[in-house]
Image 1 (tube, one colour):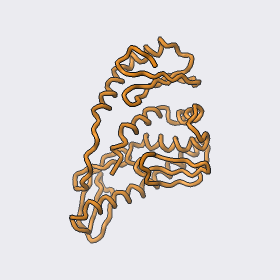
Image 2 (cartoon, helix red, strand yellow):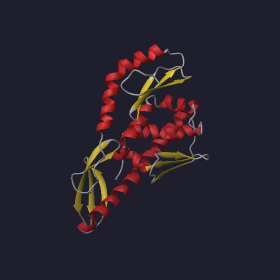
Image 3 (cartoon, helix red, strand yellow):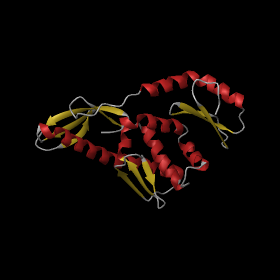
Image 4 (tube, helix red, strand yellow):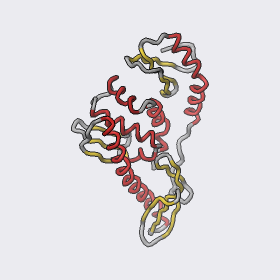
Length: 231
């Protein structure tokens, strides 16, 4: 820890040779630096970044939990970081499609069951598109990392974004496709790197950083916005 700042600062010294990085962790910050950097250099770095740090800490404190969805026309639902408005239509069959920036939900049931019907349509739509997008991204990054995942699936996890088994089966939380592309990419790379190191050692994180240099920011984004990625 480094004292003398308005916010808690934890310094993590690593064997890596790249430059220092700063990321938020709850109500404080963590600074990851090469072992050779002096304390004075680290202090100067934190001083220089203080305006950005304070702004991010304020944003975190001001963040509010999203209102529960009512599943009515005009509400927004995110897909790969893009806000799409819900448009509820009446029809003979139930369906949902993305059209012109709108998620058009055609429902056949009564208004009393509208919320249940639309939520079911949305969950099915997200799960289908999550499978397609995550398979595509997994295969693309697997080639870069030179690994071969066994099976790719999406699941209804409550408290994790992905999982990689010792046999190479990778599964993702379907809700992650609500997040921006760069966050989805981080989750994909995070799981694929477990095919190289089935742990969270320093070596493992170096594999992640090679592909996603700002992985700490991506982790922090997920911590701050996990409540937004729900239906």
